[in-house]
Image (cartoon, rainbow, N blue to C red; front, side, top):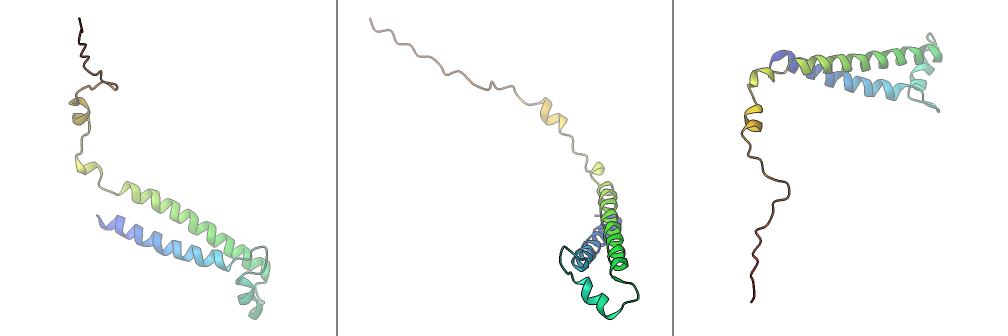
Length: 108
């Protein structure tokens, strides 16, 4: 594996862990963990905190998606030189339902 692929995988894992934390901090239908942090500091307010957490979560999702696509292009599959066309061309054709030999014994 190359260094770029490994770096992207590590960044994707870190972003995934951060995304889990940000989602847990957001307010759901009830009170979330964000209400505990906002109670001590009223400079932001509840609505602004929810907006910031939502923007962070969308940013992390977009980063994970983009990094995953870029990581898929950095793998060395092209250098593997695997050619399956030789295997397909050299296969003998076998009927799907082979016929059994018919042994007809005539009893006279």
